[in-house]
Image 1 (cartoon, rainbow, N blue to C red):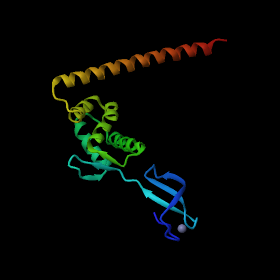
Image 2: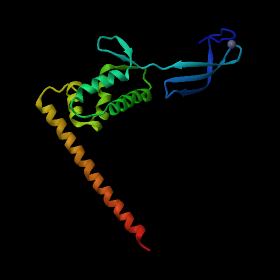
Image 3: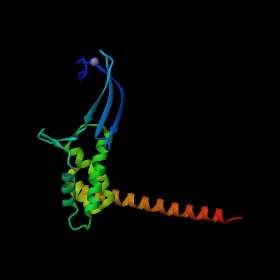
Image 4: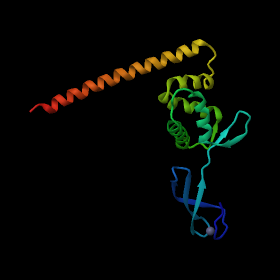
Length: 172
Ligand SMILES: [Zn+2]
């Protein structure tokens, strides 16, 4: 980045901040030659690297299209799909990497999809985690069941705690 005043090649960053939900970085710089200050704006594009090595811009629409197929017949709303795609994008923006292997995109979809619909999750996981046999499905379903039971136990315990605290408050 050359200084816009004297064309000096080096500058130091005085301040940097992100804007537009982390898609833009503004940096305040000071020229090491003439010491004048200027601002640069960097647009952070997320790129997806396909298996062939070709890169293309990250697209929420593509995420939605892929997930929608797995959700067929499951009554998942378009709103939920859009929110899922947003979460996936935010996940990668927060990670700070500009290039994402396409496989990583599929894996990043798994966790929010699991919260959305377990059947759609299984369909999607069978592709992205290379399920090869019924055993893979069985193991995954066993994990889902165990996690669900743990969550239910946890919820029951919390409800118990809430009742306890109500009792305490009610005491004179
Ligand atoms: Zn300068």
